[in-house]
Length: 446
Image (cartoon, rainbow, N blue to C red; front, side, top):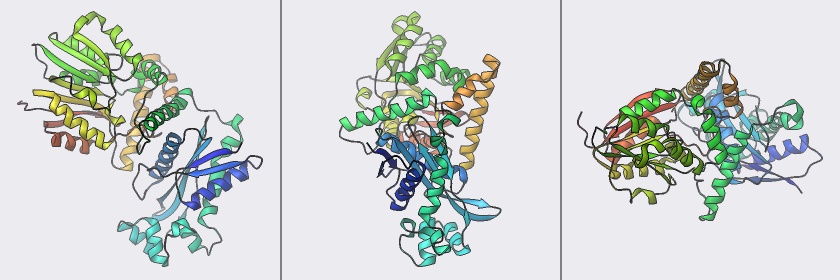
């Protein structure tokens, strides 16, 4: 039976390059190739090595979610980089398999000054090439390199060589370690999400899902992976306008109950309803918080579903930690509006979550700082770096290993959506390593 390759593009040049690369590396195998259209998650014209590679990673990961039964998924992303003060173009290549992921890049070549000028004016490279060379849709033909070299090297040949290089770990599996189970679980999580979406009529966007294997990983390693975890929990609790009287706090995606525990201890007159989509997490929360009796209630829910939002009645505050980034922009905006209606006057909506930097340098900084925070935590707790090594192997750092099921939004945009929903005194209270605590109050007077 032919092995199935899914390319995260419908561009015939990219499909041909990927297929040729596989056939040259594995001449004894038969392959079928399929192209799918998926977003890159980066700017239309990536302007750095890091952003270009991230676009290829995002595309390959999204293709794996859309067609989980395939054997391989390929992402090809064209980009521009600075080459000793001049702009050059290249492409990043990411190949995912069932046991490993590999990456490579093409050679780079300098762009003509007129093309560079058009890029600075906001044109994409393909459009700029068409203008300068008087062509139409050259990016689906020989591309700029074919035009500049008189087809001694065309776009397909340039990509094909990089595909071959990315396949080296697949050709030599004994020399390259396979991915850890957590990364495989993330792909399985995407497959489960796809199945759920298809049963509802087929996805234009895949809803998030969470496996019980993810639950166990997070329980085991959350104290390492969440930057300044205790500080975040304390900050969230202190920002709640709970007071000493009876009040009701709603926690979205309560996990094992750490934040709910802090709230219940700090505010003796408070009740907490914890919602979560993981039965394992809900069981752990019930066990941890059993000593609070009826002050804590745990309920299953789907964060993206709106059905849970009406029957709850008014609450004093809504809190959420590391959950809302699973929603897309439209879902976040709707959630913020619905929470505003849920919260009583004087109440609050406080969020701790992953946020998306808006510049590639910000993404790189967030990635480095998250690595540093996990390494520091591992050393503080265990005196060694084993937890950090697992963090790296599992590909947990979103800013280095994007997952299509994680959709963090820029912080400034989310502050704007909170204000649009009606919240006042919207502010940011803490931030580190691409994680932030922010929120707003309803008719709140300081």
